[in-house]
Length: 220
Image (cartoon, rainbow, N blue to C red; front, side):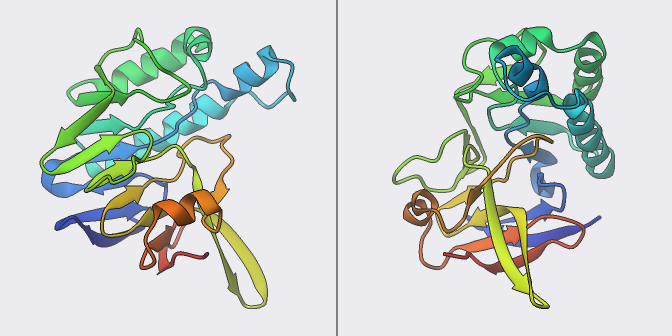
């Protein structure tokens, strides 16, 4: 499995190349910002037409990560659906796929800014969740400690062999961990953006996703 291990809040975690976070001691897989139904939402609102396969692709990758880890608990860190109407418009096959992935697992949906309110799928629906000593929420809070969040879709850029490479990235420092967006049709915010520079400490690291995840000092 393509992964990088790192320590956060005295816990050993693994950043998977897919953008998922794996916590073996809790048998917990965490993903953020799936944005299921984004192509439908964009078409509904008059945006550009995108191939309507994003939800299927995202769920395929999630199924693969669950098969590899055999996780007993899943936390989706908010913005799992592009909006509540996108959830309603989600196809029967996709809803059945989610139900199948949930079978035998504890599943927690964290509220996001795109998908607040109750959802008609199985699992718990919470504003935030505390597991052991770690707090899982959608948006990082000022002064947060041992906090795992998403929302910003962070990306990091490196230069190698004379060219620039940008990848979705985990950002981690002593107080917080921000996950990359997991969904297929998700953009991102460069780690050099002032918002992320303000949130993350000077010693923050970026973990670039992809076939060979790589840890580097967070580009600023």
